[in-house]
Length: 547
Image (cartoon, rainbow, N blue to C red; front, side, top):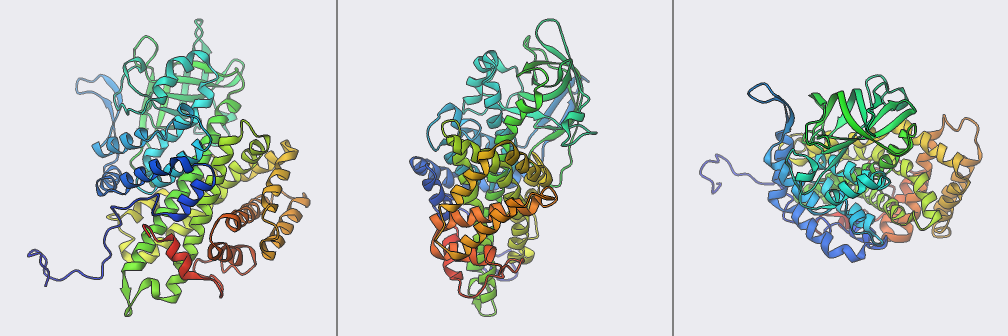
């Protein structure tokens, strides 16, 4: 009988909660990749953050932040317009954690080789516990390169952006210890076609602009300022629009409602109207898209990192369950077909992790290495497309490992399941990403050469990889109808690059399993179809959380 007098039956054969562990040291694929790509110096700090994230109280805060989503408060009790967003205390607890780790600005505030990789590793871990808080964090991180181009804005705002003391108050920037930056690009009639935007910006005669119009998605309305696209006299331009005007009065940004999203429940996304809001031109008039796209480039990196993290979180839960749960007189991990399933999921997770962190290394070195700059331009949309496209399928499979236990919101799988489609949509859907890859190939004759050179550095390690490289070259050689084949082209790019990266840096069982299933034509399409001859248990053991 149970020792608990309130239980009428004994509870057994249930795994313990996955908590109290180090998300960095307990993830061999992540820790190996971080060291491989130049963040070995950050290992101790990443491990400390991994322990904070894995603590029961942090996991509980993540759960509460999603259970009690933000509430829009348009007016105070006297009828005065407020346009405030109220959050559960758990949200602020998580924001204090992520800002305290510097994921909003550390590579800019404390630049060094491997800084973007170290941040990327921490971002992957954070995504497993509470991904909603990554939205304002990512936008702040991505805004810095654009803000640095304006000397006045940089002087006033960057010290507050770099500060790691999270300040939840709604107040003018000079009164705050730290600030966060959001963005507003899309409108009802345009979506990804931002050149169809109708929001207008007219000069106010004193160097600023008066903005009138709307945004269909205005991300994180509680942020202290937003980068906003609007039609100026000289064409579509980017504007820096603070919540409070320079004189300290509230800017005329009217929140209409919060979006009722499928997932991402802890984070506030909104629709707004600008009723004569004040903004400052950022960049050249008429060059709004190139200005804000630089921000988008960094947010696309984070989409890949976040999806890799959510994928890892789901696979970790599936593995943890399989190693503890018993069925038919054996642990699930000892059931051959289940071993195949979780090993296949582990391959997908490690390949996504290594690919996302390889991209982060390109962000570290793009300013000093033309080859890395070309790699970043070509592979940012490609990696974003592929990791974000594969992750939802894997998360669904991981949920199935837990069965009914996975399909309830009391555990983490429900949150991950609802969250995982977002990154594939945000900052450009799949088609937009694949077409952007083709544009990069047309604009830079070096980009393809750089990619092929990196992949071919693994030539000779496996004949099947060599055959995949030859097939990839043939894909690029045939330019007829390449736009129609864009998804196929990008898929082959990424699978071949993942194979090369795994051959060069992962254990033999992992590289062999990936190449045999993804590159050798023996891919059963569903997870759990790895061919004979693969050391399934070695792959699963490597990926087991905390092992």
